[in-house]
Length: 479
Image 1 (tube, rainbow, N blue to C red):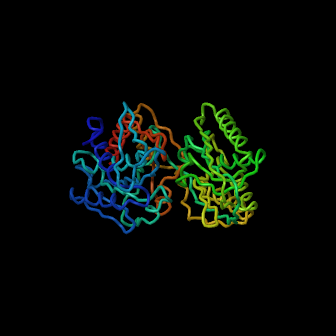
Image 2 (image 1 turned 45 degrees about the vertical axis):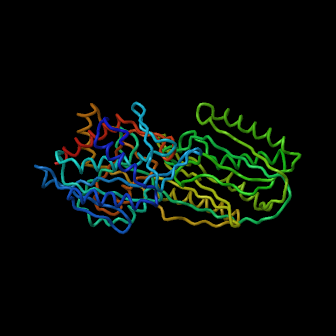
Image 3 (image 1 turned 120 degrees about the vertical axis):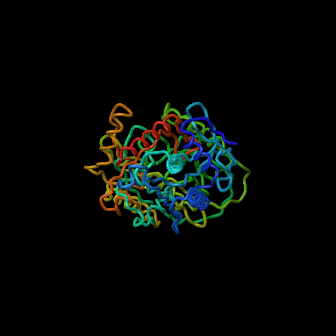
């Protein structure tokens, strides 16, 4: 039974609800590729899937537009899968449970998948409607954008004739994105030695943080759970002796981690001191981030004394110092916006290693690589090694854009004003397409969304309606 019927635009929300039933977490998009292939077959539209799982669907121009230059519409099919601690949702099989509250659409305890499911749904609605006025359309659905733009990176651009591309992966209505940062993933691996000691086991968990997209929210006062847990232990060592067992936190390299935990060992007689310190630490954080990220929780649990496997003292110092010193946050501002940044998104301990993943972003390739090298140098100083995953390119601003000019013409009529233009700090796939397709004129638009990459993800229903209507008017104007 449909949940979001009777709201405009019905076709867009119909398709969004349909794809919300299809598993499409990053790295698990096979059924979504199959859904799109069946969609095109059922409507006698040309197209198909490639070996990576990307899908292209073509639609001829409407009457009077047959000979117009094609337009590429592009969105990615995968979504970030994150859920609350209380949720039992299985992203590999369970449909996203949608909840409509007034003008807001959200999910029940999970990410909503509006990033970029709304973009996908808009394109499907356009493909499904025979009455719309538009040029020939080349609709590109890429996979695994959220884990390094894998689909776009492996896409064969020779199947496209268009040199005008509208990407539907932005999260702010009334803004035309005209550029974005590039990024590179840095995996730091620090070897750890082990020892067995007798003591009282304890576990500290930091949670309740707002988190968010590590590109678009990096310049906001958002706490990073992994950085906080390093601070916790750095300050605790002035109060009581302890031995670390592990540090674990974060789920996605492109999201600010909202929770982290660590198992460690203390002397039984120090338990009350550690409890008092933990409570004071939570109070201090809430005071420091009052009105910004002040729902932080710091919980301590303890067990009974026995023999436990812990890090040796030297390894413990290296892990704590590494997390403390690891660059995280905005490194360079330009025109009041993040230009270069990094964020540690994942940390794990196991098999004699501590591994942390950072995502470095910049509109400058040289700044991106310099900051990644800084993380590499720190890792090497801590006797570890780094692996740099192949990065994605920045999307450079195009001074002359006929597509942008026509979109502003439509905006003046539709919105009563020209739209703002922006260079996003988060990555969009336009950079990869622009680097390979000569003279590509690309823009990115989208409706208002908040909390992307977190279970607090929401999208404005009325903003979806306006953005979709604006997109249709833009297509009609592209003769």
